[in-house]
Amino acid sequence: MTVTAGQTIIASDFKNTSTGAGDAGKIPKLNSQGKLDSSFLKFSGTGSDGALTITSGTTTLDCASAKMLVKNYSSISITGTAKLAFINPHANGSKIILKSQGNVTITSSTVPAIDCSAMGAIYGAAYNAALGSNGGGSGSGGGSLTNAGSNGSAGLGSSNAGGNSLGFIGDIGSATGGGGGGAGGAGGAAYNSNVSLSDTYYQKVIVLMPAAGGGGGQGNTNDGGAGGRGGRGGGALYIECGGAYSCSSTISVAGEVGATATAGGSYYAGSGGGGGGGTLIILYSILTSNTGTYNVNGGAGGNSGTRVNAGGAGATGVSLIALNTEFA
Amino acid sequence: MEKQNIIINGDNKTKARAEVKLLFKNIETQKTLHQQEFDNAVKLYEEHIKSCQETGSEPEMPEPKFSALEIPEHILTYQLNCQHCGHKVGELTYPYTKDIEEVIAQGDLHTSTCDECINS
Image (cartoon, rainbow over all chains, first blue to last red; front, top):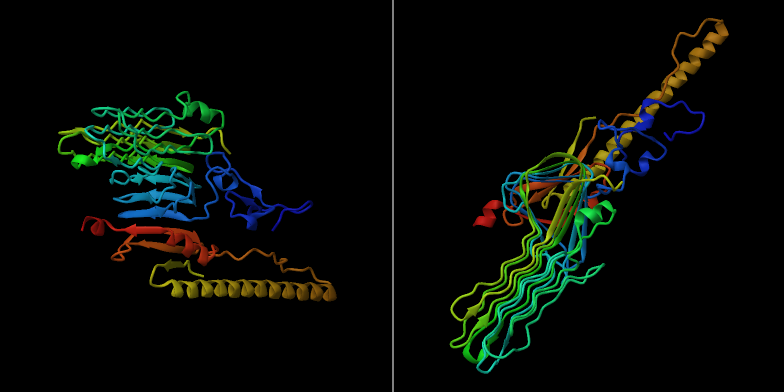
C-alpha cells in the first residue's frame, strides 16, 4: 500500500530493499550497515540480469563488436574452477561493465578467473613485401591509458613503410597503436601520461579505456620472410559492487603477445609488437577481503631469433581497486 | 504455498514456461481465496455488530484486519550448461516475477564450456 497523508504507517510500509515500481510510495529503511541498500541507488545497477553463479568451466559473454557491454547482475559469484571470459571486441576495443547490486565473490583457482585480456584495439597486421635486399623491422608495442609502448627493433638496410597499426578511438581520446616494422616503428603513445585513476576517481570521473594494439612486423617476401602480427590491446573492465567484495583470484586486462616472425633465407624479419595493457577499475561498497591479482601487463613483443627481430613490448595498463565513497 | 524453484535449461524451456504460468495461476488463486476469507470475516463481523446493536450487548468479536498474503520467494533458475556435453557449470537466478522470456534471453547470452570439454 502506498503511504499517504493521514494514514497509519505499519511495519510493511518500510522497505530495506526495493523491487522497483511495485514499491512505489514505500519508505526506505537503513540496512545493517546503517546505509541505504544498493537497490535504492544507481551505483551497482538494476540487478535485472539476475544473480550470476558459476562454479566450473568457462562462461563466455559475446561483446558482438560493440564498444560497450553492460551487465546488471544482482550478485556475482565465480568460484571453484570457473572462468568468465569475453569474445568479439569492437575493432577499437570494448569497455566491459559488470554491475552487481549484491556481493561480488571471486575465488576461482583458474587463472584468470575473469579474462578481459586482448579485448582492446585490434593489432597491426604483418607487413610483408618485396624489400629488395633489406631486412624487416619489428612492430612496436601498443600504448595504454597512461604509458607508451616500446619501440620495435630497426630493420637492416634502408627504412621501409611500417605495417598496419590501429590505436583505440574512445569517447574521450585515444592511445596509439604501435608502429609497424621498418627502421623500427615508434612505440604507441599513451592517451595521457598525467592521468591518475585515483585522482580522476575522486573527482567523480571514471576513465575507462581499452589499450592500443601492437604494430605488425615486417617481412621480406623476396627470401620467404614473414613478419609477425601485433598483439591485441587489453580490454577495459569496470566492476561496481554494491555489496561485499571478496577476491582471491586473478583478473586480467592484459595485452596480447605479438606474433613471432618467420625468418627469411637471407634477411631479417620483424616480430609483432605486444598489445598495451588495459584499464581495470573495481569499486565496492564493503570490503570482505582482497588478495586478488590484477594483471594489467602489456603483451610481450614477438620473440627474436636467427634473422628475427623482437617486437616491442606493449605498455603497462592501470588498475584501481577501491572503496566507493563518491558514487550513489 | 511451498517455495518453488523453476529450472530453465536448453531442454525444458517450454516446460519452464508452463510451470511459471501455473505458478502465477496458483498465486492468483491463493490471493483470491485469501481475499474471500477476509471478506467472509468482515461479513461475519458486520453481522455480529448488527446483532449486538439489536440486542444491546457489547461486541465481542474483534474487527478483522487485512494483511497481505505472504508469498514464499519462488526462484527462476537458468542453468548454465556446457554447450558440448550439457554438464552444469553455473546458473543465473531471478525472482519469479521476472519475465521468463527475459530470463531466457539473458541466459542465452551466456555460453559455457565445462572443464572436461575444455581439456579434452
